[in-house]
Length: 114
Image (cartoon, rainbow, N blue to C red; front, side, top):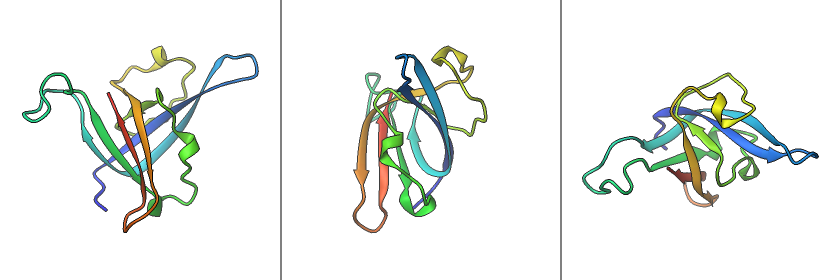
């Protein structure tokens, strides 16, 4: 259970008026790999892909429902709430896959994205 990073997730939901609402979640003990630049194994097509694991053992209230395809991932701790994606002034990624790995020695939520 190696942790090497912290991250902020902005989870998008729609309110009663069908307007976007972004909820911020901070995680300070995660495993994060990937990001900008071409890799020898992935090439240019997947150069900006990332993988992230958030371990259940580090968080009492970790809930898979707090993650959705298209949510924003920032590989650092932010304290700013946003109204739209344009409010972010840092590089960010979007979640494209979510896997709930609840079994084994290190149960975790695995996120992937670009």
